[in-house]
Amino acid sequence: MTVYVNEYDGPGEPVLLLHGIGGSADSFTGQFAALSARHRVLAWDAPGYARSAAPQEAPGMTGYAATAAAVLRERDAVPAHVVGVSWGGVIATRLALEHPEVVRSLVLVDSTRGSGRTAEQATAMRRRADELAEVGPDAFARARAPRLLSAEAPPELAERVATAMARSIRLPGYAYAAASMAETDHNDVLGRVSVPTLVIAGDRDVVTGVTESEAIAAAVPGARFAVIEGAGHLSNVECPEEFNRLVLEFLS
Image (cartoon, rainbow, N blue to C red; front, side):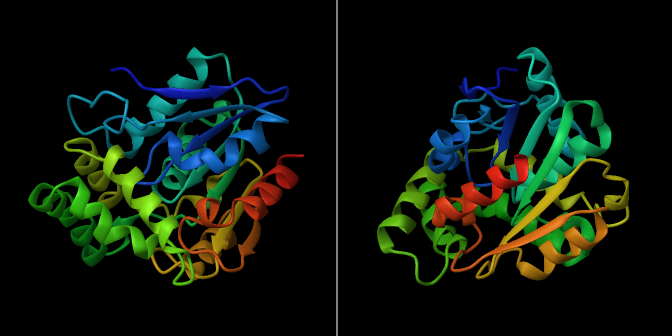
């Protein structure tokens, strides 16, 4: 299985960027220049997304974490700081739990403990794949994109997010991702995360919400917590300057 990785050869320690369930490596366009000024930056298209080949079967959260670990080892980028947005943050958490030797630190952005925490959340997550199959990527993306940003976000930003999502998602990759979220509940294992961790939340995130990020920060030993004012779920996209400042400050 071929995994696409966008790489920038900066001068410092490697940073791996893991996008959300509707994204791709291009979700971090607002981070590449700032982060690569100080770090070697790698951003993947998750298996089955955008330019990456689809897995032959559902990887599960453990499989995505193993693939991320392999990406880092193959590129001699171990250990890396790992930045995960939403679903990417859940993969990053599993990576730190199951492959701690490849992780130097974690940044978990507008993330979650997993959609397997309740039967209702798991069912809703799995239904997303049925919706994508029914309406197609364009309509699916245009329906979901506005909720990923704050109500005050300019229409052109919502349009850009929708266009990028439509280009990134397809079946079966999206269904496999949704299934991995539906089967995951990290609530009882977050206390085993042993690397320095920063948790970031947009204060206007209506997808996972500040409360969920607060719960993650409270459960991870020694975790720092930061809120980006005026940002929705995709805080790195909506407020890139403040996001980059927080991340670089943490990594330093």
